[in-house]
Image 1: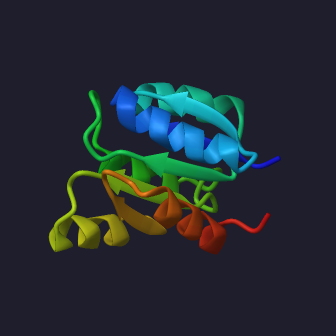
Image 2: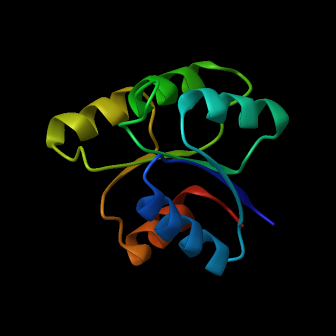
Length: 121
């Protein structure tokens, strides 16, 4: 069974994404801050990470950059999913190593298509 770490501090968005993954048979681990995400990553290595940009302690951009620099996590695909959806935001996400960038509110179909491109079941 594949595992996803969803780093999201908005309960509604978290519930939507969690439901999408669970319907597809994924195990879901959640965190609502960068610090909590780091704690979860120290315990297990997920098959995919979904990151919000606007988080209480650090931006998803910073977290993504750190994940892609770390030899223990750089191979994990990262999807940034954010309300920050200008071309500049998407460019930053790409420059910092995000494997995909989705705009909120996320559409289940878009999320599932993106996952299929990034994770081999």
